[in-house]
Image 1 (cartoon, one colour):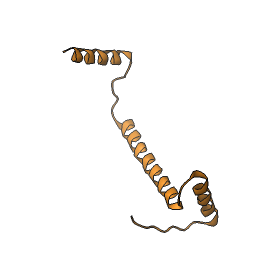
Image 2 (cartoon, one colour):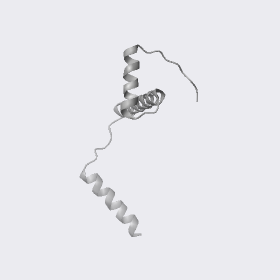
Image 3 (cartoon, helix red, strand yellow):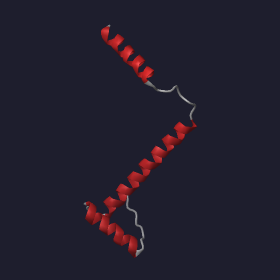
Image 4 (cartoon, one colour):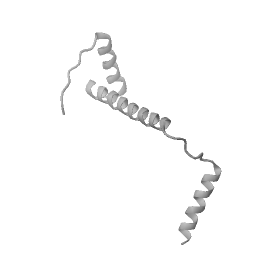
Length: 79
């Protein structure tokens, strides 16, 4: 694992220390790693949402769509 040093103003250092204590993290590094993971997840989700928004419209999914899907599944299981 690599090491990275960061500098924080006293107010942010206090905040991090409080979060570590209150939320059960073992170290401030664990807390920061969790924040970074969550940010990476948000960025991936944002990318997926933007990709979806930029894609061409799909066929609407309604009750008929699910009825047809059930029918196909039933036909395959009866064979």
